[in-house]
Length: 168
Image 1 (cartoon, rainbow, N blue to C red):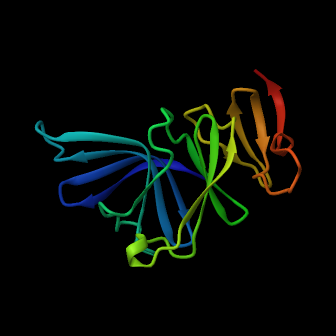
Image 2: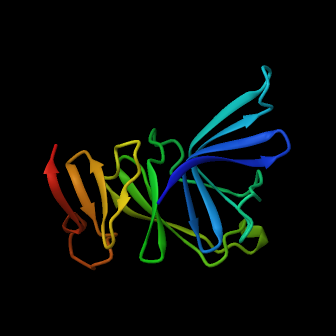
């Protein structure tokens, strides 16, 4: 289950993540606040469409170049991350994207991550992340409370992949 927390990136820098997920030996931190020098003269930068990741099996190894951006400039922020069918799903208010990888590193260091848009038109509008309830993620969307099955049923229409259980 995703949770909030903070991790130290380097000396004098801390990131505070709204959503954390541990997957395949990596720690993923999404929708982050980068705080440099915690004193009165410190600075804070928000990266609400960024996902930082650690080295494999070293959750405290976040570095300044280990991050991925998700649809920068769309005026939406990451509103949750879950794991579904062996892939990580990154939620925004009107879209869901998939992060797949076997080695999560910068591409120049052998990383093979792929970011694939799955849905455009609905997503998670709440600051609370979608809840993984087995085959479905339950979330608040503009249509109401929906159950999302990950879009993997190969139906003709992606709208059929979601089940509205309460209308807005």
